[in-house]
Every structure is written in structure tokens, then in C-alpha cells.
Image (cartoon, one colour):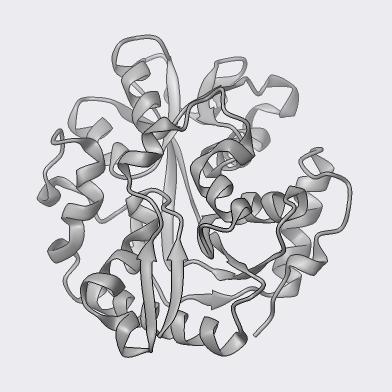
Length: 285
């Protein structure tokens, strides 16, 4: 049986993998899939850590993980900067929102955000989507993006008044709304499935076929599995309080070259690449 080790991302993005393991779907495909670290291990990621000292990237670079998922733009960035060979094999099954949330009644729409600090995690989905949500409304010169840590740390900072606005995904959007915050803007996006070059096309297909079966189970009974996502809120949000509006799941899509080119050109125009082509990171079919 082929071993595939996964570096954990946030549970909302990893849910199809969690369900695939829990329901034995990967084993049915002849794959021994497991997480190479726990979600508790991710707590050591801080705002001060360089990218390749964060858990996902560190484990992939050192060879202790064969795959991880991260936002589309970050997957391109990490493969371009990294030293270990890898591929951007597919767009992940989670279609999730990042939302700018606040308790401040003076901030209601993206146009109110000129010069206002928004706290994100650097070079992750919260960062890239915040640029996309605000740039057309207020202009690039009026963006004020500040770099915080993991989403639970950003949420703590918003609650205690250290931050005026933050960008987060589930379960922290549902938690923010439950506790009286409101949404300024939200944007849905996909993520990239980064895989080691050693995984063959056949092994990748078996993995994604199993993940797609997990997606079908999630869509048939979301709240059977919602506790995995709600657990990230450490008891502050019950599984039945997790809203369905801000995340859904679909079958994995193989990454299209045209989509890659648009993403890469967008990043390049904003100085978010190393200035070298990442086309070698693309896998089609």
C-alpha cells in the first residue's frame, strides 16, 4: 500500500482528506493516507515565522510530507521559492470564503477601508483575497494590510480590540457573526494541491478519486462532519452553528494552464513572485 503523508492546513480546507481517512476511502484506493502532524502542531506557526518555517511548507520541504493544500497563489509562490521538487496538481475540493470582519460600525463597505489596517496572514489566502476585495474599491495605494498570525490569533486580536478589521475563513466567519461582528466584504476562492514529484499520475488519480468520494459524503450530510471544522473555534462555536453559506465542497479540478497564467500574471504585476517562471510547477490532467 502506497503511503501518502499530508501536512495539515486549516480543517475547513482539509475536510475531504479527514473524511477520506475516517471513512476508509483512501484505503479502498490502495493508499495509506495520514497527516504527518496534528492541528495542535500548527499552533506554533506565528506571524514572525518565515514562510518555509511554517509547518506545511517546512514539512514538505524536508520530505516529511508528500502533499498539502494552500491557496492557489501561495501554491505557485511556494513551489517557485522552494528547493524540493513538487507539482501543483489540482485545485482543492474546498471552495471557501475569506471575509473581512469587524465590530466597528464606521466600517460597512469596502470603500470605507481606505487606509484602515486589515490584519491577515502574510502570503496566504487571507492576504491575497484581501487585496482582491479592496484594490478595485479604494485603489492599491490606499490598501493597509498588516500581517498577523493564524486565524484564531487574528480573531483574538479583533475581540480584544487590538485589531480594527481582520480577514478570516470558517469557522471564524460564523463565530464572528454569532458574536456580533459584521462582514465588510467576502470572496470565494480555491486552493492548490501541492504534491511531491515522486507521486505518479496514477497515484494522484487514486488519491483524488477517493477525495471526490469524500466530497460526495460531505455534501450528502454536511453536519455529520462539521464538528471537524467547528473544533478549530475551541468550543466557542457548536457544529450546528457553522453556516453553510461560506464554504462548500466540489470534486477536485485539474489545474488549467490558462487559469495558471492569469494567476501568475496577477502575482507578477504586484511583485509577489521571485521573477522566474513557475510553469514547471503545473500539472495538467
